Image (cartoon, rainbow, N blue to C red; front, side, top):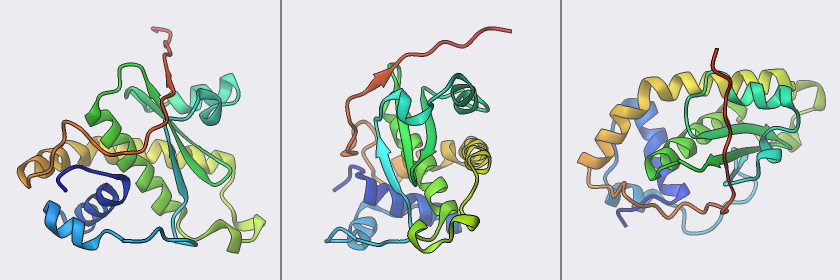
Length: 174
């Protein structure tokens, strides 16, 4: 399949970050797991959540908007990376949001059930991870997107499993 689902996109994105190589649809499909993996080493990613799943206060909304000029918001809540789409989000924005969520998931690393509470990242550190991931995507996403198109991936549509929540937010102009 030449369209991205979450598993194929994650495989192709992680390979790109590792060595700059873009996998073809055939290569990624061969690496895609046939069965759902339980107890894996990444955090769960929830796509298309409500705004309150990302930010539960005005302060958290400001943190979600910091370093972010994209039509989606990301946050980490209850060991899940939550992605809230704006009304203007395109298919390319959706792909970028999932790539960014995969980055955060990889940073969080091991299953949180095995990490003592004293070693879990603080909420402040989780927001720092979100902000760092914005910078990483700013640097790497455009060449990645060009590369996947050249490798034969269909980037006009996806098979990403989004819930249908969309939100509109406005920022004050300084």
